[in-house]
Length: 253
Length: 381
Image (cartoon, rainbow over all chains, first blue to last red):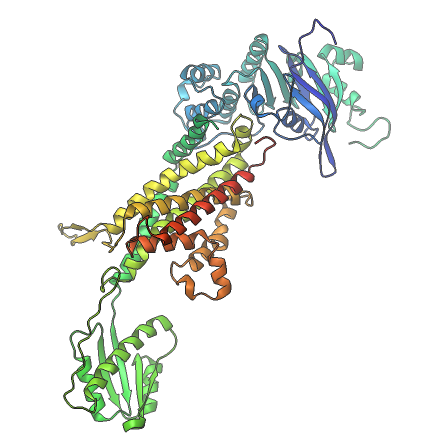
């Protein structure tokens, strides 16, 4: 333990989750520090969503433990300090932008006009306040979903594929905002299967088959794998060749 | 428990309704439509004329029957066709030329009467039989051995309501509780299913809201709409507003003008308890559905048996033992009983029957709340 480093904001100790006989999360150790953006990278079905749900206390670990700000999860009071953006849209289509936001803000105890206006401004939906969600485009819904996640200014933020279906210009704005949040001391974990977003993170966690197969900064991982390409690095850490076939002859997972 | 979060959930339900015109129509227009239709069917249907074929009767009897049928106080018109041939009378019934055949055999003290109907529509024939039997007893009076002995004048009175109360007067008050129960069940079932499928429940459970706050918020939100529904329906059932003829439109009345004895306020309490139970039954059963169609599939499984066994159409105490036992665990049974006690017999909160019904309904509502909350899967309460 380095005394100079801040206390971990998100911690996992040999965290495991098994469904029937499938080990979705298979012994993960994490130590995420405030003020940093962590990228959770891995293919579909690698356990990203299950890991985030365990950390956010939405599902109970089969073994091991998850801690948020030192409190063992699941813990209901801690949920107020977490912002969770699920992969699905998770909005009420019959409700307007402001009503959706107002509802989740109220559940988080942050229903103030100022908080709602501020976060709406942030995702540039200020002029669509009264529109029902079913009239919004996919990108606008994504922005509203992010706004619902951030409205109570949580110090811990879990984002499950936040930029899927978001156009490039907006994606840049999303990341600029994540960076501003991190600068204020928030801890952000972003799950993605898009490698070109990885360089926007401070640290990367490669996950495959429910296990973290490599972690470090983008530069560290490139150096370790001796390649400029993160995708190639991922395949190498996963023990696969350039075509995705196992190098050592063991069957692919 | 945070009142703020409970109200946020209730408010969300109300905001969703505002734009969901179809659900609003289901909640407010459908019950009025069905009740109005029922009123029209029960009150507007014509009693009709009964064609009675009489075979083998002595002339005196035929004459007595014709005299009795001519009585203007009879509810239905009975036309009598006398014939000597028993087979012809049977054929007339078979071919639809007569509704009922009366076949007289023997004579004097050993006279026998056989009444023949088609047997294809027991309900309609039942009322025809009643009319024919009334006719026979009226005719028999004039055939009594003592000439000139008049039949006593029978006048009718009822303990509850009045003798001219009809089926609608007995049925309409019961509908108050039933509609709130059925429509609220369907709406919450679908609404909560959308929460589960659409991912909003997941987002909800990622906030500090408790399961109790969710089910309570849902109950308040939907009960509010159920309450308005009950008020609208009560007004429609009790009102009688005459609309004068205007141009080509003939005069008509709005409202069913149903006879009631008790306080609609108690009926309102019963309907509200039913609605709270229905909200949580909807939440509970939404766990076992994947699509909105599957919620609708609960109607024949869950709703129809309750309508059949709950005493809406057939009295519970006349059901076979096994079905009676089932009826006694259905909330509908207690609601129907309470509504009849109050609206027809004029009972109030002081009545032990009403108290027992309300106590059971409260108990069932609490049970459903617990079941509903239990089906919201969560690692923390």
